[in-house]
Image 1 (cartoon, rainbow, N blue to C red):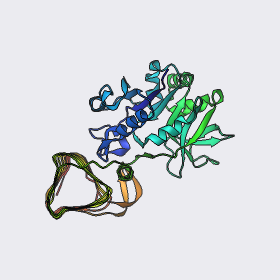
Image 2 (cartoon, helix red, strand yellow):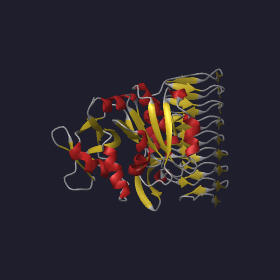
Image 3 (spheres, helix red, strand yellow):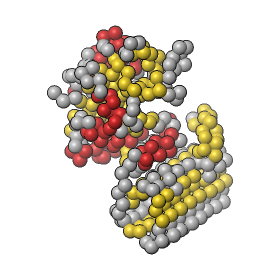
Image 4 (cartoon, rainbow, N blue to C red):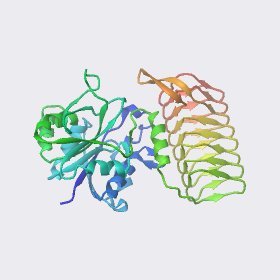
Length: 398
């Protein structure tokens, strides 16, 4: 019997707003592929083709993208989580599809095939993929004893290590009994159920040697995009006019035109149907989606531009993310610096951050946006405006 994998993909990803306004977190594009695209392809690369995806928020977006899995070499089954109560509950609703050892992993982390093969290295045993990190422990911290995980705790607890769980496990079917017990008692946290089941299984720590990065906050998307671009393959089509400079890994999609005098310093991914230039400079770790227009004398550095955006001439973007359909007139200044970012009334110190712009925003001529600002979806910024604080969804700023 082949090993099955359960991908947990039902959540909205509220901490990634404004980019999850109409898009589930797992479908946010990095290097012009959805986050979960990397997860599915990495599983298939390791001969794991039977995949159960737990969906919920904006599930239609996921199901239309992946279909029955045939285009990915997979056999995909969908299970709906009506209420996004937690990752333990998400696994609980998929339990009827599991009758043997299985993998479970989040759909919103960037992983490569090596990370999956690391987890599979436990063979017939069971394991949890871990990394050594001082980052926030989203899934808890593992305490080790004789090459097994003896406990799972919060990072804040005294004596906790820096061995952080990634949320990816190879588990026995018996663990589902603990999951069901906890869910039925109102505890929807998967790590709580796994912790309770530790005495019944030998759960090995598997240190990830491959690629694993989690995007918790919107500014994390830039790091994830950087990593995905560094690991991506180059596929170049489209039309390049005379006088285009290309250095490093640059992918260009079909129907895209790169006009004369434009300089591209990879790694860069540019989608299909774009019109770039003339005399545009795009620097490394930048991804540009489909049907994007970038007008002359614009400078873009280490940024994510999602599909259907338009950026007017003489604009400057650094360390910034533009959501779907953002329309920028001319002379936008969105520079980057070390800043405090206000996210849901909490302030985070973020190094070298530009601006984070939600989908379908309209930005007029000559607008300056201070580093670290979050612009809510469907907002409008009048020409000549200076943005020095966050703009809520649908607001008009003059």
